[in-house]
Length: 165
Image (cartoon, rainbow, N blue to C red; front, top):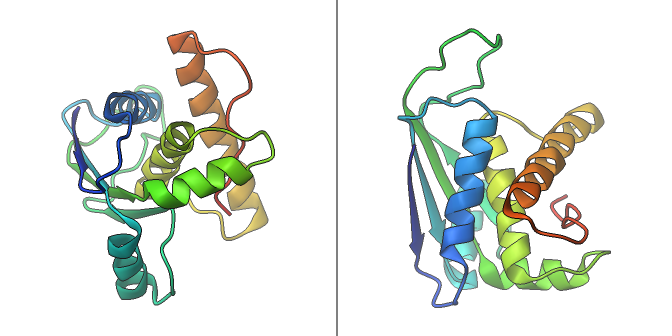
């Protein structure tokens, strides 16, 4: 899996953790190992411009996903996943820091960025949270991926609660 993390935000973030959690999420969702993903980290001003341009909504947001080849997890265990460009995930550490601090369990900006990375991967794979049943499925997968990744790394304590609504 080719994953690029490009930090254009000017904020010090744990780029390796973002890379690791993205790689874990993509593998867990059984996406072809030769597929490509890009993660771009931007400041609030750049995120606001993207949010207005693509969603026609004011203010910066936490994460945006831009799918390319519309890859999907294989429907069957023995099905070969297609190779391609998964797409781009754009993260905003300023929004992540605020959300992490306001979360019920309270967690760091880096933990929030890890959660948002998984959230972005799931959006690239076609998952959404507009309807209650979609939200339950997506957030359940998101929690399972984060919990699995944290367990693999030997991280203790509660996993970050979803802050994306």
